[in-house]
Image 1 (cartoon, helix red, strand yellow):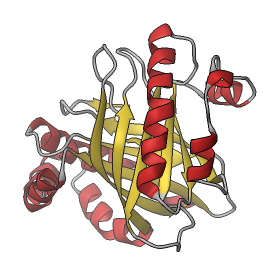
Image 2: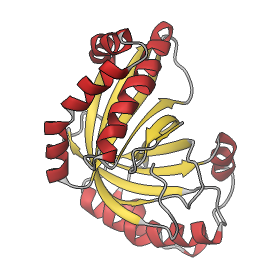
Image 3: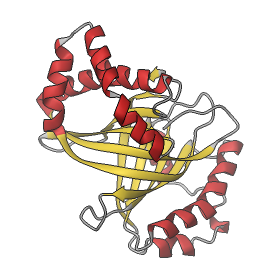
Image 4: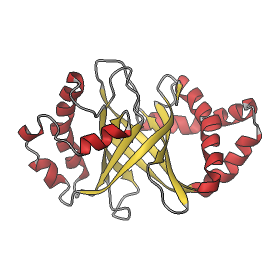
Length: 259
């Protein structure tokens, strides 16, 4: 999510809230080069301009780890400070697309991107991150795990997550006693209902795949001292899905493009 959702902020660690719009894509294997090139060469530059002008907080594109038989899943996301800035961004961002398409070394790329982008979209989500705990300075979040769940009371889910996990991970990150390098909790504000079997999520950031699998197969230091009952009650059916995303490219809040 991360960063989604996944911005690097200078130490000390900073926790903040934000709105995030996320798009979900399904791309045929023989067209992944078209999709990724369009995102890297066009969309990233557009979002870089928008971030430098303060319209957005960040942007990113990620690829799902693991394969199915025919398509590859991707997500892109844009983060905003609040709903007012989100509205302002969508009212203004069109000019950056036009400017950037004229500056591309391969002008046809923007035309292909415009034509193909809509055919790859399979859904979108509007999220509110109640908290996002950034990675320490110098840490590059290459992989993110999205933990999806269904809660009868999403606000309570976020409150319990903040109460238990936020201070816990703040201490672990500062002590460098964990392979996990960032954390966030979000509620899906649109679409609503039970169609997608989840309405809340947490996002865990890691530097590499080995760290993810090592974390799965080891005990987190100090976790036995936590009272996790409120967490369990806030999502009684557990995780609906846990997805590993490889973060391909992103734009930070300064407009820097990072691969």
